[in-house]
Length: 80
Image (tube, rainbow, N blue to C red; front, side):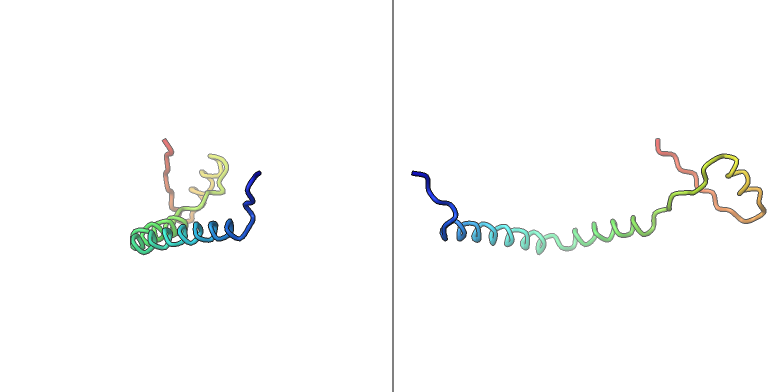
C-alpha cells in the first residue's frame, strides 16, 4: 500500500526543512552582510549614475547639434 504524504507528519517534515533553509539563509546574511551591502551599493550606483541612451538617430543630427552654437558634451563609447 502507498503511504500517505499529506498527513500531519509530512507537514512537520516540510516545516522543519523550511526552518532549516531559513536558518541557513539568515546565517549567510549574518556572515556576509558587509559584502552584500557593498555589492548592493555598487548595483544602485550603476543604475543611478549610468549615462542614458541618446536620442540622436543620425550623423546629420550630430552635426546639427554640434554646429548649433550651444555648448555640447560629447561622450564617445565603443562596445568592442
